[in-house]
Image: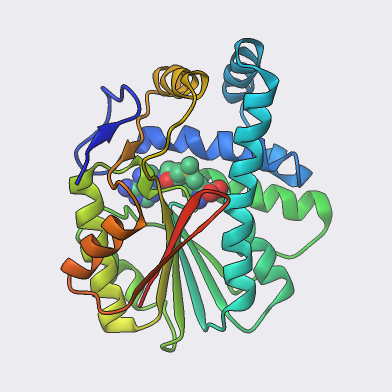
Length: 266
Ligand SMILES: C[S@@+](CC[C@H](N)C(=O)[O-])C[C@H]1O[C@@H](n2cnc3c(N)ncnc32)[C@H](O)[C@@H]1O
């Protein structure tokens, strides 16, 4: 098991990491290239950091990072589109519009977006503004809940809202920010949810790659600017799979797409 730090997160907390919320804004900035509604979630501070980064980083590197991030998100979109469920729960939903948009089109299933309190509050206000600006009703089957994915009360917080046993639990761009200890704890929370509520957990993890020097430098720079850190906790998918199986899960599948490691647990 390798534990390789990819940043300098001196501000990283042991449990929870509110500072990560700025990463939700960066993700929105990238997603805004594909869907302009994401611009609502990008603050002046994030724009300034982006403008600075894009002045020093080669445009080919920026293009690669943006493309890869969008491909990552599209895989989650496809998973939601191709899986039957009664209730979907996203951990660390950030400002993703997946759940909100889903509920505008599909009224029968519940979609619960969860994140830290400050993100949830901000997101709710902005979504309400989007509804007013575009003349749409806030979907009744869409819910925003403050849930720290690393607390012990995750099951208690979600349990009463989850209906049926065809549930999907998603974590896009969340766990790479967790240390090994945090990730282990999060997986225990997922275990409890799957045991008591059934369904599938779908996510992605960092894995060991021979990234270019420019990429590593940029990661360090962004880590300092945003006071964040991401971790490579597993060499590859097999190591991740072994770790999850050792945690007591029977069914784990992994696959790579565009060099991104995805996995499903049920
Ligand atoms: C890179 S963003 C990804 C956002 C979103 N999933 C997306 O892909 O657009 C990471 C998100 O994880 C959230 N987060 C970090 N630590 C968390 C925790 N312990 N519990 C819940 N959310 C957390 C942050 O607030 C942030 O919104």
